[in-house]
Amino acid sequence: MKKILTGFIFLVLCGKTMPQNYVPSRDDVKAFYTTKTLVVLEDNPLLEYNYIIKKVMGQEWTITEYDFISSAEFEEKRKDPQYSFIYMAQVTFEADKTDAAYRFLHLSLGGDYYRLNEMPDIVAVPLAYYNVEEDDYAYKLGILVRFMQNHAKLIRENPEIISANVFKHYNDNIKDIRDKTLYILESELSNDVNSAARIKKVYPYRFRIATEEEIEQAIEEKNPDVVFLHKVGPEGTKLNARCYKVIIGAADANFYYFNYHNVSDRNPDGFLESDFKNLVKK
Image 1 (cartoon, one colour):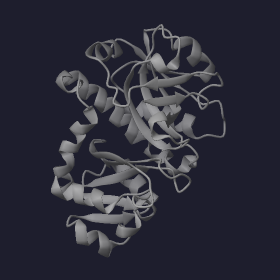
Image 2 (tube, one colour):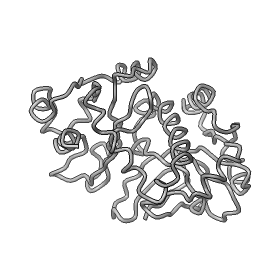
Image 3 (cartoon, rainbow, N blue to C red):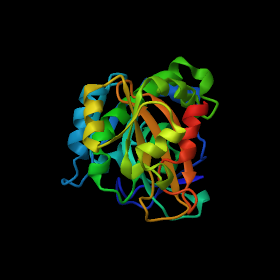
């Protein structure tokens, strides 16, 4: 079970709890396409999020009408079924027995729901560990919004995959990584694969230990030859918390690999040797 705390959105005492492998129903998907999507802006004027999300929606969003609202308006309008919402929430996982908190980006349906936890998600993606600086993930917001839109299209056109753990569907794309160059930050590699020489021992395909600027450039250019690692973990502040590992296409915003592990001394916060082996064997 996961608990979504809303302090990052608005200061009220409510949370969001739902099954860990929750997927929307077919009726949820149908309902979404009749809504107007409201993007919840942050009250903090120092955050770049508001500027970036406005730019991103103008560039990427085509599947529904959209507008922007304040966090105060969100609490009122979220109970109206004519709206869907894009918003950030603070996420903790009860089953993990840890206080580690993350930021997730949600696309959810409005409706007559008393609590935020009752709002059905069309899709929610891990964005960052909660205490990570905004600069570490802001440049990836655009491609994550593009993925959310593509995902909504996917489950509308292929409703048969809705009943399963839909993220497993994306791991079917692993084989296509072999024709692309994997960009990965050195800071996101575990110690046993933290150099080009060590990676080559287990991963025979093209890769680049890149910088954030190089990944950002590949995203902006929509480089079809590049996939990159989006790692979300506790950044050395917690043990036994989750480390999410998502490989995303810089051009198509597709997920090519989706996995996570619980951080421990044996499995640190980073992309593991076992992850590289998964890319090869699949």
